[in-house]
Amino acid sequence: MSFIKKQIKKFLYFSLRILGGKNFSNDLYGPFALFKFLIVQKFFRVNHHVPWPVHWTSQVKCPEKIQKGTRNPGMALCCYLDGRNGIIVGKNVWIGPRVSIISQNHNTNNYHKYKDTKPIKIGDNCWLATNAVILPGVELGNHVVVAAGAVVTESFKQDNILLGGVPAKIIKKLNKYEANS
Image 1: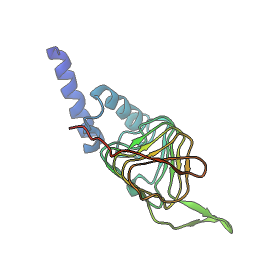
Image 2: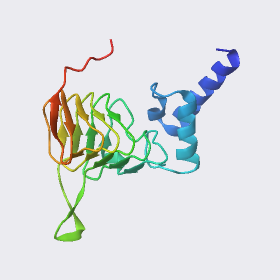
Image 3: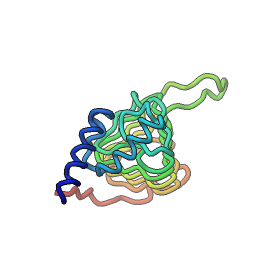
């Protein structure tokens, strides 16, 4: 890498730390991708209330009630994260495009009131594939793969499983997750 590119990279990382806080210094994303998120979030004010990089087509409600793991939720296209009752995301959780994680629901007898539920908990090494929906109060164990288009309405605390369908059910058991060394 040339001297100029190294200096630009240092400047971008420094700028991201100063303007975007410590959450922008994540090594999972390159400095130019983070700079793009910084411009959209801080300059154009799209998702400016979220303290980590979020795709500009995604929507995040109550980010202060979302505990993120090692990956930033909402980085994929068109995600919807509703953290009003809380969302706890484990380490190495991959969230695909158009995934909805909805922690709050309306009272069916009065739509102006909301139900208080437990926070959504997603274990470590999970993968939520495209168009998956996680509904209020759901807990997922470690290494749970939610298939594309699945709607998870109840908790699955078992580890190493594949969920699919509407409503979601266990499709099969998976081998133990093989973490990178």
